[in-house]
Amino acid sequence: MSVKLTVTVPDELRRRARAAAALRGETLSDVVRTSLEQYIEHVLEDADDARLAQEIRARIDSGETRTYSHQDIWSEIEDLEARGALPA
Image (cartoon, rainbow, N blue to C red):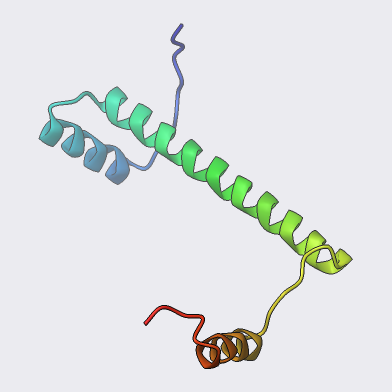
């Protein structure tokens, strides 16, 4: 089911959107629909990323997940190299 949506935009944006639609052989509605779909997808992905970051931060803060410093990582690499445990 489709519904009409009225949106007020600056005249310059309307002009550019119509030009983009013409270049692609689409209607203005096609351009607006595609742009809105992409915008919503981007917003939802950003929200999901923020939620995951908060979950990770909570695990770190609670001690459930350990963090490693740059020096910790290089020390481990150097130890593995000294033991010959890394591929050549």
